Amino acid sequence: MTAFTPDRPYNALPLLPPPGDIETKAVLKACIEARAAVAELKQCGSLIPNQAMLINTIPVLEAQASSAIENIVTTADRLFQFASAPDSPVDAATKEAFRYSKALFSGFQSVQTRSLTTRTAIEVCSIVQGVDMQIRRTPGTALIEANSGKVIYTPPETAVILQEKLSNWEKFIHKATEFDPLVRLAVMHYQFEAIHPFTDGNGRTGRILNILFLVDTGLLEIPVLYLSRYIIQHKQDYYQYLHRVTVEGDWQSWILFMLKAVFETAQWTTHKIQAIRQLMEITTDYVKTNRPKVYNRDLLDLIFVQPYCRIANVVEAEIAQRQTASNYLKELCDLEVLQEIKVGKEKLFIHPRFLKLLTAETHTVTPYESL
Ligand SMILES: Nc1ncnc2c1ncn2[C@@H]1O[C@H](COP(=O)(O)OP(=O)(O)OP(=O)(O)O)[C@@H](O)[C@H]1O
Ligand SMILES: [Mg+2]
Image 1 (cartoon, helix red, strand yellow):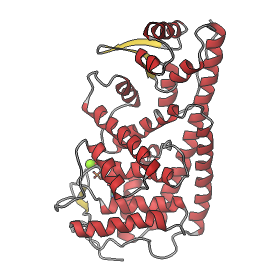
Image 2 (cartoon, protein in one colour; image 1 turned 45 degrees about the horizontal axis):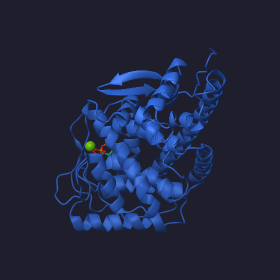
Image 3 (tube, helix red, strand yellow; image 1 turned 90 degrees about the horizontal axis):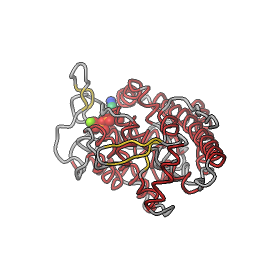
Image 4 (tube, protein in one colour; image 1 turned 90 degrees about the vertical axis):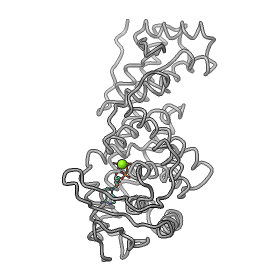
């Protein structure tokens, strides 16, 4: 192992690929399971007629959890509400976590046309931080353990060294196709965090890049894996396994940790999406039966695109003019599908069953009792 001292810049951070055979039997076995779970997620997501329903909602859950890893504490509910009423007063944590959703979305758009590079990381980190970010040029960045105040890791320093490590990282992402993409994902996430190219925001940027990588390699079509769910539930392991790669060269535990994270969250997200489909079906039946005149496929879709809806959303979707749009939403309130609330000056219509389903651990769909 190359010498590592916690409070000295780790300029000897080895370039990729990792030494030795990292694709052991255990890794390959976990890989097969994780790949199958991701393939199922991809398939299940494609069955949702309007992809905006997933693109607008699952990444918000990811934003909430990934920000919480950094002790930026808000709820998915507040994030959804803020997305629909951006002019309403809001706390700093919600604003910051909202930037994470924006960065994920913008990164997703970026990988549609350009592959994932250091440039993508700079753009993502700039949105996460809300200011233009650059690769570090000055010394002084270190990871400090919260309880003891001790320095546990000091990333490499000087612009030239960071450039060298980042271009090696980029090459590994795209060229090391001898490794399974999910193994590459685990390796690239460690390496990105070990390089720690920015003064702040590296954890969140790295976790966004994970999702973008899955889209870039085609394992997913849209950024809907809720990976930070597992990471925050196993935050100590996450930090510890990252650290053990540095100190002991223990790639096995780290890769297995990430494969399990992908496996479990892919399954969880698939079940969530299946439940969303089920809720769409029962809501459609319920509205069709009880208010056939209000039933409109586009309107029904719209209330699943965001759990907080404004009259303007209905108008913008060209479903109806303002007055009719308002009447439609009021009729849905009569049916108790929606519920009208006021946020600041904004009138919002919550879709409580959808909101509850999105924010719950479980995937239970609350049925409608016939009126
Ligand atoms: N021992 C370690 N070696 C390398 N990287 C680590 C280690 N421990 C933690 N990390 C990574 O560093 C991140 C923290 O870095 P930084 O504060 O720049 O990012 P952030 O987005 O502001 O914070 P956070 O990760 O807490 O969201 C962690 O989230 C993790 O990904
Ligand atoms: Mg930080």
